[in-house]
Image (cartoon, rainbow, N blue to C red; front, side, top):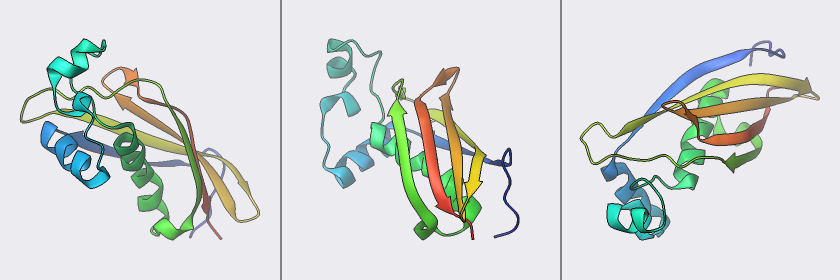
Length: 135
């Protein structure tokens, strides 16, 4: 990898999520909680509607780093806190999650990257950080 420095910004990644995406992820993850496909069930527990899986949101965000380093095997660790759900409207367009990252530390061949994830005006991940081998 070329020179990596603190403050370096990673290229933004925009990911569209639709109800179809959520249903397919439900099958792949075997997480069939009704809040991921039923507005009625989601609203019954106080959500505004169907929400994407937190693990989908987390996994999609890692693409910022893996695209940047070119090899997912370089990821050493990944941590996030879920701060807001990604509400997925029942439209063909769904919604979009925007992921960005910046290098916050570099030491011993490991870069620490702080990630942000937003859906509209809401931050949907908090304290998200990835450690990745850059040597």
